Image (cartoon, rainbow, N blue to C red; front, side, top):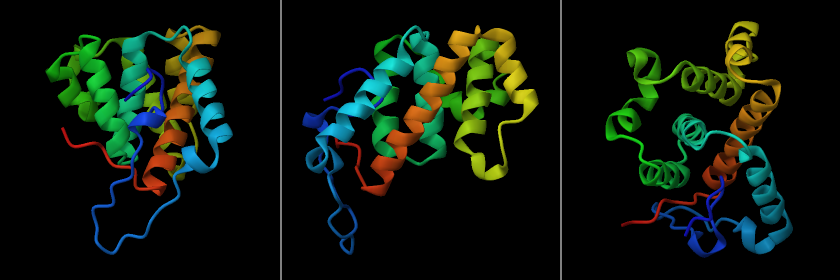
Length: 168
């Protein structure tokens, strides 16, 4: 189902509308394959040279904040396949209270992801940005920002079109 980037594979994308009053939603990947292809390219470019563990943490945290069940299901499964522990997966939503369970780089990526995802609170503060800039090179920081922006775009496509996680 999943091709290893931020977005779902075409084969795994089916809309399941669980609410009887829900209307049919557009299936963006079908009506605009060039948009889907562009998103997949952006996903690949943003993930390049980013530690896969940090990448999955970014995708999971943004998906939690955006209530994207499809992406959460996908990226938690991917993180497990990469060897992520159940304890860390369970505590991503409370990473600030998890002590040193997450590394300094992981905490900086999570905090930056939250700031990017929750722009309705204002902007990415200088303090949050400085923490990330202190632990990531400029190139890494650009990639982390791009990953957070990209998963936010996927989340918004999937939530807007009511794409649901498949039942297992």
